[in-house]
Image (tube, rainbow, N blue to C red; front, side, top):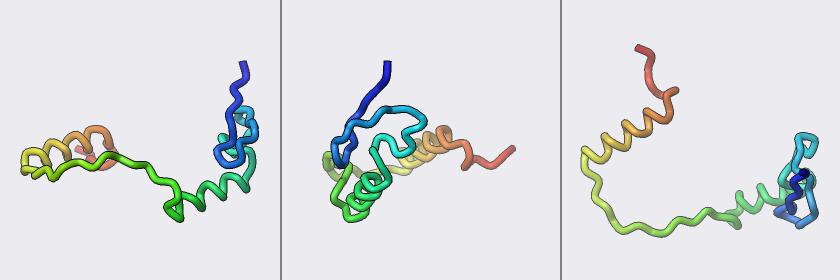
Length: 78
């Protein structure tokens, strides 16, 4: 089964395959238009505003430990 998607810029149908080098876009032009929208902050990934949360040292240490575990390239070799 061939997966077909719509180009996010012009809505032209794009076949999702390795030969479609600009996927999900139909062409370089549409890809550049989209990148320009992100650069001009026309596109945004929004997240609900969270209330003011006071971070304690323990919370920061836990977040740092979690980050280091999932990003092992930051950990110095033993």
